[in-house]
Amino acid sequence: MRPMADQYFIYSRAMQTFEDYESRDEDVQESIEAVKPHLRGPGADLPRAAFEWWTTAYAAAREARSVGAIKGVAREYLCADHEHARTPYNIAQGLMKATVHRLWKNLYHARTSCGHARPREAIRDAFVPERERAIEYMRELLGEIAAERGETAEGMVSRLDRDGGLSAP
Image (cartoon, rainbow, N blue to C red):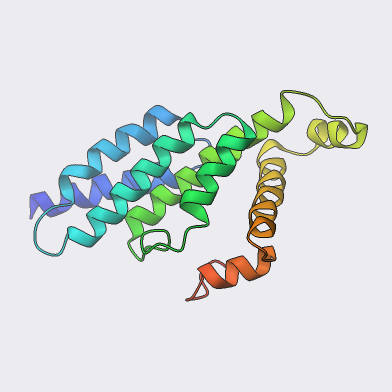
């Protein structure tokens, strides 16, 4: 019974880390490494593959610092019509959240570090909380990706979200 309790504790701690916007990269990486040994045995192939997909996505998100690089990661991992992009496995979904949070943070810093041509945007950056502003920037970026594909942002979400989970409140 002890190994199951240990695994539950590790997964629970990892999920808390993955879902917390304020988690440090070092803590996320530590949680990834703690979870990996527990994704083995019968029936673990699909969860392990999904977790590996999102581990790679998280690493790419950590490295993406420019708007173009962030857009590339979003295109490859968030907007992909790939089985692991919409995984049913909670531990991979948690790492997906950590990846999105990292992209939000990097996008916020990429967009705010070089100033704005429009004073209104600079004022919004000064008064709107970072997380909220980062989400606004990500919505714009995903809208651009959808437009590149000849879709609306809503159409892209509908295409990628066959089970309705992304559209939930």
